[in-house]
Image (cartoon, rainbow, N blue to C red; front, side):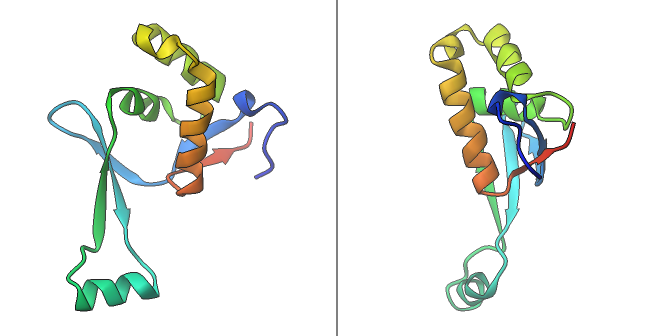
Length: 111
């Protein structure tokens, strides 16, 4: 999808399975697939699935990614729920969202 010129207007949507742990944090399930992963699984007993645990801020952001809210709206919710996140809010949030997109944990949807 072509992104908006203003990154904060983009609407992310989760692209992976996830759950809430008993500690209340988000845990993303990532299937390790592909040729090299298959070899590593067979010969080095590497797991088929990896479990990525997010911290308090990451979990808050992830839970807001619903395919409807913009990056800006997610930032406003994060700022309201976690005062400590307000410092350099959008610089950090856009970097985090970019990392999630780069790893195919999220995709952007059209408005």
